[in-house]
Image (cartoon, rainbow, N blue to C red):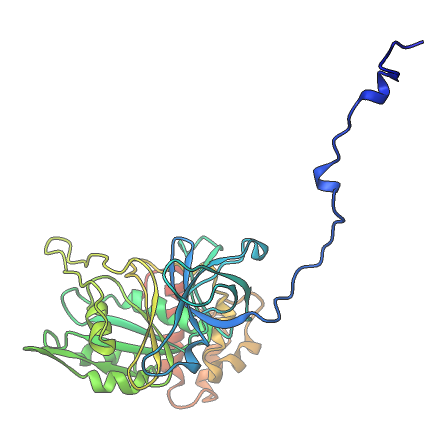
Length: 345
């Protein structure tokens, strides 16, 4: 017989601690947050998101309320980027020290992305829900990089964004030679030039950006931040071109959405020195050229549309792509080479 103490055996004196994970019924149900406040992300900084209440479409001139928020744990690893339409709960007063939670990310209408390099299939989302991609390039100081411009155009076509070329520093070089290479692509362009105390051509730029959400992309030193400051009245840091390398220095470190007086938004992004396109499917690029896309039915299986057996040559020669078909096909192939990292020839 087991020994007893105080009238109790040893087993009866053992205390069992309830399982902390089993103390409440488990459920897979998640809160719906039906009362979440609609907002749109305008800044991202180290896990904190600046969210404009109501989003881009509902703001007025002045009185825009930006709330600082963090991503709710229930969103998991889902990324949140500038331009995302989100739902907020918690303190949405926007007062100093307040912090809301992003509990929902709405479906995106467009996504601009790039990969680390052309062999990397993992894509990095840059901006969501934009309508236009403006590729900013200087005509001199630093010299233009057509291959880089081509890559940005590939990303625009892949994302379903309307492309626009913004050519700066026309006071240093004639834009005619550069624009000639893009006439067959039917990409619109605007030109700015510096004069003492003023930037000429801003009205043409404003006309192209009015009422739209436009992403500005360009390598460092092309005058992108100068352009943003002139268009929005912001005070973005401005860099200088290195006299030795001929390249600009990074001044913008993160994307930010800025309102344009009179309507529209621009999203300024950090200067880029490479634009990986490993995530782009060549067939999606071809469909940005509707007069050529129908001709791919004549291509052999697995055709990359830049080889002797490609059926697009016969399609163009038969006049089925219109009078500018040959120039358009050569432009398409140039973009395909840019997407694959191959030299143009």
